[in-house]
Structures are given as C-alpha cells and as structure tokens.
Image (cartoon, each protein chain N blue to C red):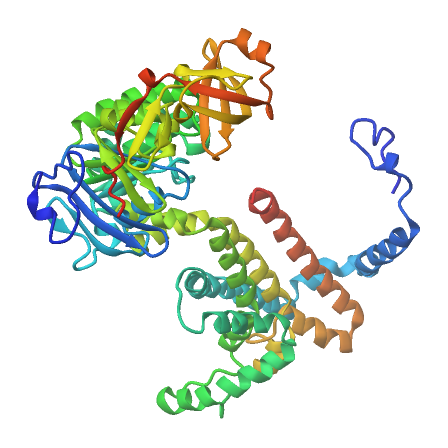
Length: 349
Length: 275
C-alpha cells in the first residue's frame, strides 16, 4: 500500500490497492460519465467490470487520451496529464472488441505499423512484427488482410499489434466478446501467458466472471460512473457489493440496512404455497425466465420488492410446479446457506 | 429492345406484383427518350466519311492537346489542393467550417459564365488579385492556358472535394484514433491510413472533376477566351465550328463523346464498380 497515493480527506482504498512505485495511478473525471480512481502495480492485470454505461470504455478512453478528462494519470512514475501528453506519445496498447485492424494492410503491416510510426526502419520493423505474430501463433497468416482472418485470428493479430510497441499500459476492451466459446477459451489461455510476461499494467474490460478470475490480479467494479468495489477476484466474487457482480458470479445478493446477504441459486427452494420460516428468508416472486443451466433449470424471478433472484431447480420440479414466465411462486433460502458481510467496503460516499 | 427469351426464368421479376402503372411507365419512357435520342441522332448524323481527316486536322489536334493538357492539370490541381481541403473539412474542427463547406459547394450550382465573370473580377488585368500580380511580377493570367486550368479547377474542385470529404467521413475517425495510439503523427496516419481508406472517394472525385473539366465551356470562354493553340479547348472549337460548319461540329462532338465514354468505361472497369 503506497501511502503517498492517499491524501487528506480521501477515503482509503479498500482491498489491497497496492501501488508499489511504478505502475498506474489515475484519478479520472469525465463529467456526467465517470469519476473514478484507479491504482495498479506494474505487472498487474486489473479486470474492469460493471454493467453497460458504468463508464468502463470511458475509463479506457481517458487513460489512452482519446476521451477528454479532468484529473491526473500517472504511468511508470511519469505524469501523462501534467502537462497533457498527446495520444501518440502515451505508451498505450489498445485492443478493442472488434479488433480495428487497418483493413487495407496485411496482418504483418498492421503489427509493424506502430513500430514504423515510432521511427523504426522498415526491415527491422517487419522482422519484429513477424516475431510477434509467431508468438501469438498466427505467424503463417502474416500476408493476409483482416477480412481474410477469422475473429479469433484477427484478435490475435490485434493483441500482437498492441504488444509490439511495448506499451506501459495495455488496455483491452472486451477482447473476447463476439468470439466463439472455444476460440475465446483458447485465446484466454494464450492471453494469460502473455500477460504474465507483461511488465506494464494491463486493464481488461470484461463481462465474464471467468476472465476476472483467471486473468486478473485485481478487480475494479464500476457502477454508474463510480468505483463500487475493488479487491482480489476471489474476494470480490465471494462478497459482491453490486447486483451486477452478484449476477456475474452467479450469486443472489440481498441488501439489508447494514449488511449484504449472499446465497447461491442452488440453495433456493421454490414452492407454490407460502412456506414456513423467517420473513427475512422468503420472498413472493413472479417468474421472469426459465432456462436450462447444466443439469438444472435456472429460474429468474422478481420479488414484490423488485429484487431479482435466481434459483436452480430440477427439471422435474420445474414441470411439476408449472414454472413458466408470469407464474407466482414463493422463494425460500435456509439461513445456513446465507453468507452475511458488511456493505461498508464500498467506496461509494 | 425485345427481352431475351428466358428472361425471368431464373431471375425474380416483378410480374407477380402486377403490371407497372402507366403513370410511371409513360414519363419514364419520355425521360429515357430525351436522354437517348439526341445521342443516337448525333451518331447517325456524324459524317463518318471524313471522320479521320477531321480528327487529324491541325485545329482539332491543337484543341485536343489543350483539352487533354488542361483536364490533366486540373485533376492534378484537385488532387494536390483539394485533398488537403477535404481533409480539413472532414477532420479539423475550426471556426467557420460549415460556412466554408457551403462556399466550396457554391460553384456546383453557379452558372459557368458567372464563374468566368467572378474569375475575371479576381484575376483579370484590373482584378483585385490580378492587378496586384501584374504590378509585382508583370504576369497576367487571362487569355492564357493557365487561365483555362484555373477556370476548370474552379468549376471542378467542388465535385472532387465533396466526394473525398464524403469518403473521409464514411471511413470515420476510428482508424485515425487507432493510428494515434500506435504512435503515429497525424501526417503519418493521413498517408498510411486515412488516404488509402478514402481512395474510392479520391478516384470517383477525380473522375468527376476530369469529366467536368472536359466539358467546361462557359467559364473558360469568359475568363480565358477562345484562342486556337492556347485557350481553345474542344468545347470552344465545337462552339466556333457550329456557327461556320455544323457538320464539322458534329464530328468534333462525336470525338469528344467517344473520348469521354471511353475513359469512363475504362475507369469503371478498373475502379468505380468495386467502390
């Protein structure tokens, strides 16, 4: 924990916000969209999660310099904001969901572009680009244009292009979405390998709990343009503070005045008649959707208190109870299955 | 005019939607006739017997040379000057940008003879810029081949600029942003990314500008005159001949028609269909 990063009246970072010397420290304010503080040690991978419109892409744009912001960004002990550093002078590597490879250049030329732009001569730039393509396992596709590549291949080229310039800050904006499940898994494993070697700070925007758990050292949860939670992936997954994260890790979270109570969907019992038990652990709800989930059937229901809960039931039970959207049911959970933890870990004021 | 025997056998025709209504068929046919009949009569009435003799005559060769030269230089001027202007309009947010864009489009709708008068006002011997130029360098622009190029560029540039600006806007700023994050200067990004991606618009704009230059008459004759060997282009020669010998004028028109259709067809195969 670097004390110099926390000043005066600011609340201390919850969780291990370890900024050990070089790395990333940023306070980003984009009016109406984002007001967040991010701290990450060199070599670490931060998963940025949150619902749509939470400010994830805004954060990446502000760090890259393509979105106007107030506040400060410091990378590797050097300020990017005082004085403001032009986009092209920031050592960032960007990977977007839709790759953004230059359509008129071959895979090799795409990867060599950043090296050429930074003044490397043609031949060494191309040799280096070929090395990076080889490293990402797409070396034999060097001559292809982006439209001749599959989604997974193109994303590998895009990652090679971002890493080839040896950035201090790697920004990955949902790099796996839009890919087939198998392709995404292979790429996730590949990326984990490269991130382990990566000396700079990597920020990974994702919608998948799996990405956060397998790739990240740190999780930053954004909600409504603010930091809702930070911590290790395990910690955040076990004690989600927002509905969004609870949903991502497949937990139900019910908030009381001072505590959050979480429980897995498998611990929820569904019945048609009002059950016995504490009112604290039972809800009347209306079924919203019913989808297969592994061997079970996953039920999404909205309680009278407008809280969305998920419950797993056996297919037989689902048929027996006639669980169709619109059906009124009772949901119950045993107190022993409920984990209670304080809400105060939130950075929200 | 008869359709091929098995038309509609493999392609989906609109016949199952009912007969095309006369209220659309009749005006459509009139429009088609209006466009096709004059060209057909021009082809039929051309005195093909002495076509080659006319083509090889000195005044025609001179006019063809002037036309080829000035239209080529006009396209070059559009590429060199118009591309940067299109980029500024599409990418740089400056005060008066929308006013400038409107001003650039004015020559599109300006009667060419008015364009000629405007050029005389600016660059004529006693014009605002022209007199200054004459006093400082002793050069005068009107009635020179340079004047022809300036007149052609004035009327052709808007076609080029609007075409390229449209292509730049369509391509979007996204790739410029990506190039910047990879460390490219704006000039590097322009050369390696922006311009290559806007190339279909550049080619289409150049073709439009060239076609406009080829047929330019009003502004040219007003600003540059009609002097054989220096400012007499093909359209000016046709205009002169029409008063002296209409048959020769028809031959010259046929030459111009063949040249323009030929070049357009060549370009269409090369570029325009893929864009």
